[in-house]
Image (cartoon, rainbow, N blue to C red; front, side, top):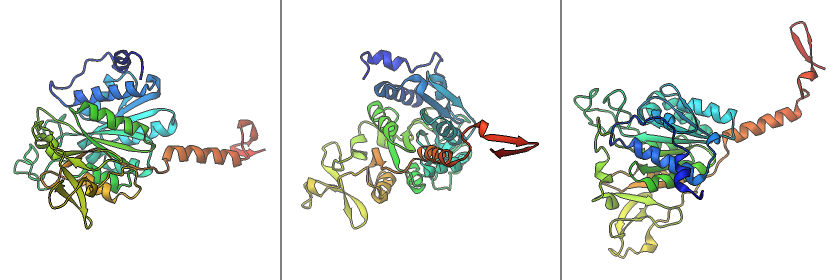
Length: 338
């Protein structure tokens, strides 16, 4: 950590006025990202923050780093290009559930499949906020909005399921107002080699207020969420007496001390396991049947696209007869090797 933590934190703030609604969860996410940068001590010039379109996508203006506010749904494509062109940059993609999973869905899944070394923060408020209240790909079935006045009849995407289904190797989830947890998972994302997806359960106070309230309310959060930690048993609850076990191939919530269940029976979280089976089950857990999983759910190793691309370029250059422009001669419109 830098000696002057406050000064280090401030160096990542731009001079722009933050233009989000008072009470919007985006403020907390911005704060967490800046704290993450300060704790990692990343030089400002080594950072690039890329966004698409949406309320969340204003974030690059508020970071004292390189930034690019791109076009709707294309943040993954732009961020991929930035990283491949300059692998030394730490690239953060800022996107929303509409920007990433609707118009940007194709770019999103292929960035994950390629395993480009990007850190993606997915703001999930289950609504289109900037365009004023249409349902999004993560809106709950039956949700009433301007574009579904009788309730949407669609089933929503689960970002974790989509990430793992696209062969993703890192997925984490946090809550906008849980700054400490957000910093923890963002730091883990930054250290992971490959595409890192961090879903943030974010509140839109104007068009979808309290959408995550049933699990984020302080009165219920401990009993309705579980914070996963690699190498530790999956225990949760206000009394720390509930846990997860496998019954056959199905996860089951149990109470420690009942029916002969002891802490030794509780599953131990292995975030680094290459097999995504348990990670997918954890990412898909929903209240009220299960606690919602928070923290780093999956963090496995795999070849990284931009590193492989650079290696391939070097190998081709080494084998090529052309080492410089001077190795070429031209006859008319034809270039030949000397």
